[in-house]
Length: 106
Image (cartoon, rainbow, N blue to C red):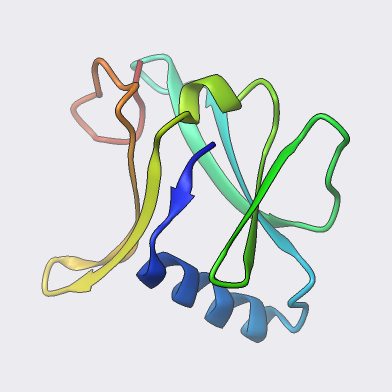
């Protein structure tokens, strides 16, 4: 299972409050696509399947489907806000190669 850093959990909580539904979970998935083979997908989801892995970090539920789980094992979702911009970043030890644009991996 992946982990969620404290800054990422705080940002997700804030976004869920803006969304008006704090019962939603953050779903992190790996989908085929991009120039290197796979890309990440993150979105709020109200449905949790029986084969989904579920974990909680600082009060935020994170859900990963069984097909994505091997690609995300040991990964960390972080949130950065600085002069270079703000956004979520996934630090994944399973990545062997990324594309030039930084949006896909293998």
